[in-house]
Image (cartoon, rainbow, N blue to C red; front, side, top):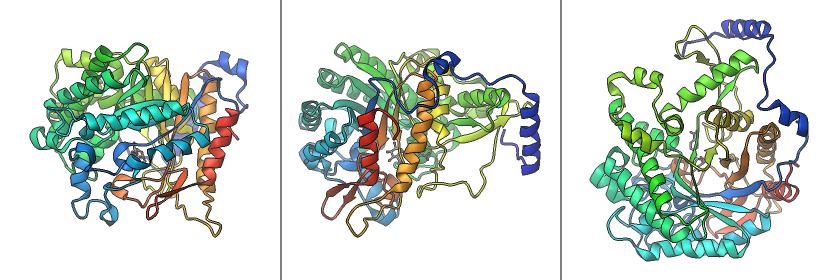
Length: 487
Ligand code: PNW
């Protein structure tokens, strides 16, 4: 599938296709373009501007009020796993500073905040007796947000799996973890959805499984062989589906359910009809184990065929559970891949290799592709008919350093955000139903295996004093929100 292309054959192929393609490329909905124009800066009325964080990355207080250990406590305390052996023991001390952190959001003018709930605070062992003091923290946080006019959007799983589930069931490798997740999801839903109207099941299958169970770079630090890896992927999407059902059963009316997936996004290398068709085929295949099976209720033929004897074991009933209907689709978008038409490949597309000079942020994987926001949301809407889409994360790392005056002039981040938002604006102008955008992140935080070295925040955090300082990007975002437009 990954056929090697030399620069010369590529140029030839791309050029030939471009010349041959006399069909005009259809925009997502040409009608909408005609009505709204595509050059403006405004976002649709009521667009939800927000920021996002995750529990282990900011909370600290890992031993307080009965919280059990998570796989990230274990992993970060294993020497050599995280840059500078950093841990989330204290992180941003948000567990104690949440009130002032809500004030940071208020000053930005955000309408919504996406945070995650630490499963081991609520169920210290993952299952068994709950710890009411754990959930109390989120009750306090939610009340504080609402009192300040900010809508809470809660993620149930952002990677801090209770260690006990890892020890007893092999984490997501075991089906029992999927069942425990559903029970936890129902428990939280019953207690929060009087106030929390948007619930996300799982954050980024495509990251925590691949990085944690395949490459061993994130917790639990495993390098599973293909058959076990595929079964782990299957149990994770199954856990999502079981949780959707449990949430549906326990939720107060008006609750909307979705997920937050970092889809792999194929961008057509040149905007011609044939490359676009290739990109749409690629979208289904590149996300076959996660969002595709969740949306379509089946694994693609190509995935099952390529996996062969290593394919996951599953039942028709499980596929039904996995594809339980969602109210919205959340997508985390940072980067993208380029694909081209390739009739000689059975998959009907080919990857375009990335040149060594392709620009990226300090995070090695964060190649800068603003079009990702356009193509990512357009593919999700076009292929699966999603009626409500949220960009649940977008942002970048930067080498932020306070200047002499104490301020952080992160012009690179501002440039990143402006160019990405311009592509998001293109999507909304063409009628792609993107309802909101959550900037990652409200503030610098524990960036997993990179520890505190890669900063993603629009507030600078001095970890010695826990002082938060708005960066230039915070000023930029405040303006965007105030005008509901790109500035
Ligand atoms: C996301 N990739 O992780 C996570 O949801 C956040 O917790 C994290 O802090 C943020 O993005 C920045 O890294 C990703 O390799 C990790 O493409 C890796 C990738 C994408 C997202």
